Length: 357
Image (tube, rainbow, N blue to C red; front, top):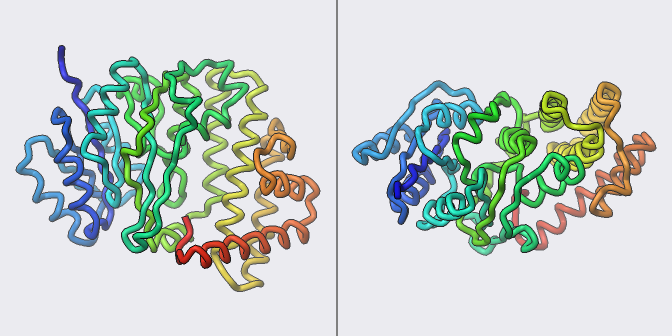
């Protein structure tokens, strides 16, 4: 029996502090039939030199390109991949030494298109901060996603399998290429993994699960600084326009728009939180909030099949946000979001953590 080749794509931008740990964790896998595609996305630090030091391993392929952002770097790696399966590791994270062995065994055994594992979230700057992205045990069994299940449970499926992330997964490469889905979000926006995986979900993958935390995701102190100019709301609107276009192309019924609406409200709420974290200057915040409301109104007008229904939201916070969004009382919505964000910050302070995740 042939041992499947696994392509491991590592997009890299100014990651010199963590890069050795990341690459070493891949080099030292218990599963050896791998190709390691290091994509240096125009780093200005010593990342390229660090990558070059690994080229003596014949499994390593180094691609040095101009800086075009994470989406372009991931796609460059995928285009260069020749494996049966593919996974991607962020350059400031690392994987357990049996990550590829266990994930490849599962996806091969189940003949699935995507395999998802649980994740350990940590910070080297805050050693006491550790938490886990667990998968509900009801989702442990391998599932063939169907058109009906997507139309009725798209939002739940996306949440269950952490479809906002790519790094806790291994994919059958032919499934990705046959779907035509590519990493395409411009570097001025966040959400490249979200767009990629939500589009893949519409192509009805067979999904399996490894219920172990095999991936180690690091929360960085400067993650907020790197994200503050990323225009989350505008990025999410681009993402949802792409999802809606794919839905129409694949012939889904209009019933799916309720599910897309749930996802939209969840992402809009996230964008609102990010906005209220972006500045402590009241007048600047008010101006940004006005733009936030105008953009939302325009987006819903253009996508009139979206249904904003508080009863469909899964948490009290989201239901409250939804109610105030519908009433279009800007003052009440602004007050609620402002107070909620102050409460969130207080909770982080009490936990002794000075960053947001």
